[in-house]
Length: 333
Image 1 (cartoon, one colour):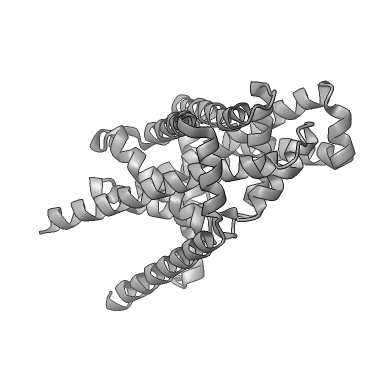
Image 2 (image 1 turned 180 degrees about the vertical axis):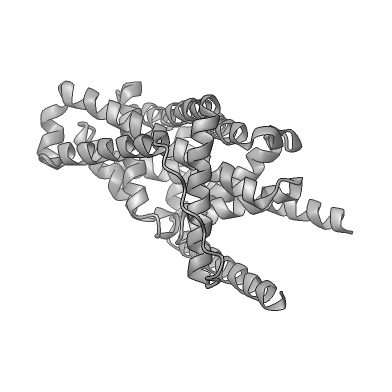
């Protein structure tokens, strides 16, 4: 037992070191003087960007909350919002991305008498509904894009690769849903093998089968989570729209949605980079050009303002973490 506790402490220490290192890299490579200049240009209107992202995050929290089942009575929505924000902040600055963030979320809600296994299950289910809703919206925006006057510009930048990507993502979504509705009997675990890899494999397998079981037995809640995450993505995409409007760019709401969904896919590929430094900036530049917004340094202004929002919510996440740790210390004492 002592060895197990010691190994867990070592793993936590390593994760903390990775997060702190990634955070330092992010801060060092962030141009805060340029950010300050852009924020002064937008002025008080930056509050609208923060408020919009808050509403989006709130719907993301609701989408996770419904997956907790009866245990959601043990934690109110604002406490869960704080836990989610902490996890998302860690996921942003950790090389393991959402894995570290989601594991931390599951661990933090154990402070509200929610079993770790149940927490992990709810996080896994909500992550799947988040991915499925995001890919569904992305595919719909790509259909709109291919039917719009922007089609030629998109093809000029991407070639036929855009069709290949869409087909692959569509097949991925179909396969996930096929797996969820299939009724194969889950394989039995082999408790005789107690190696770390075997335990991790069995844990992952159990989470996946629990997700499948959840979909088949609580189908309505699964789709509630899917719908709430869809709203989360739609509202979140308004950030792009507002930023461009504040920079006096003539855009439509659908442009913001296209940009947001596409940038998220780009950032997923560079998730191991602290704060996706460079990845988001390049994505913004390429995608803005792709939809015909290629004026001067607009992409840089957009990137800086989105970084401003990122810095704000990362700070809030850090404050929430300190508050939760302090609360735990008081309870323990």
